[in-house]
Amino acid sequence: MADRPSDQRLYDWGRSRSESQPDPVLWAGRVLRAASQSREGFPEIDEALLLTETEEQWAHAREVFDRLRHRSLDKAAPLTEEQSLLFTLAELVAKVAHNAADVRPPFDHDSGWRIGPVAYRLSASADDPQLQGRLTQALGGWPEDV
Image (cartoon, helix red, strand yellow):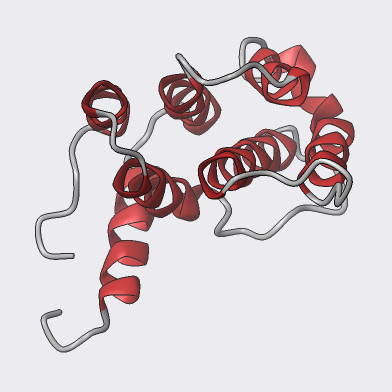
């Protein structure tokens, strides 16, 4: 594994984290909640968090994803780098919920695998030890060799 680029090791770690979860949607929601605490409120992020709370909501994940994507691409109110990573994380959460609902067409099969790497990048970009601690706990640790 040492000869792989850091991005590949991070992706492999994310895959391992995601695949080890007994309830991927609940786990994804915990990671998003950890990432979004103490950040300015965005209704689209709140919708993604609500989506993960009950299985009945998962069928609405496509609509939530569309609202997240629309906001993240809004050139009239551009997001900062940290906000952009938060929205990417929320989009991945919506994709995981959509796929878990078994609604067609599915999103990328590896959406859950990318949650860890995006959270890792968000943690690295923010000078916030509390955020890093919350994400460490939600993810169950960090990769050792990235």
